[in-house]
Image 1 (tube, rainbow, N blue to C red):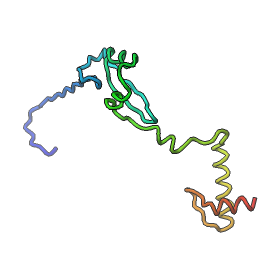
Image 2 (image 1 turned 60 degrees about the vertical axis):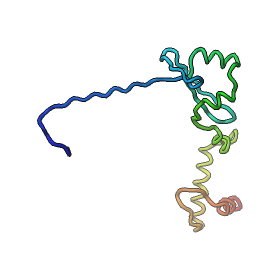
Image 3 (image 1 turned 135 degrees about the horizontal axis):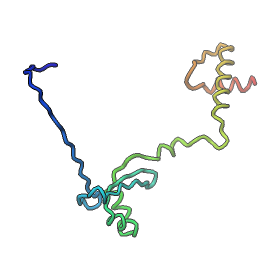
Image 4 (image 1 turned 90 degrees about the horizontal axis):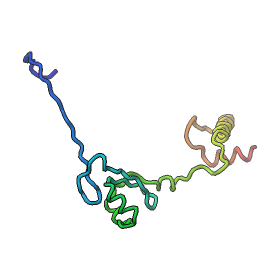
Length: 132
């Protein structure tokens, strides 16, 4: 495909080697001494690879949070969850879907022109609530 056929069979191999380094002191890590740590600080998720020795230093408080923040890789944030909190306790999603369906049916019967999907306008919801 796109090449010249010489009639020769060519075998190729690819070896990919992964080497780990301690994120705290840049020392090479043996796979048996590798600790991948996941942690969060102020709503942000982090990760770093370290050795058993450095892990003991962290647990003993010998390595500051400032150093960990500097050396760790940011892997995500929990701030999104804070910005969009979960539904209140006692919220029944199935009942809410049923209610929205009832509002859509009522709004169509009233010729209010609502779609099958998407948010309902406050005006339509208020009109439904006044009528019921």
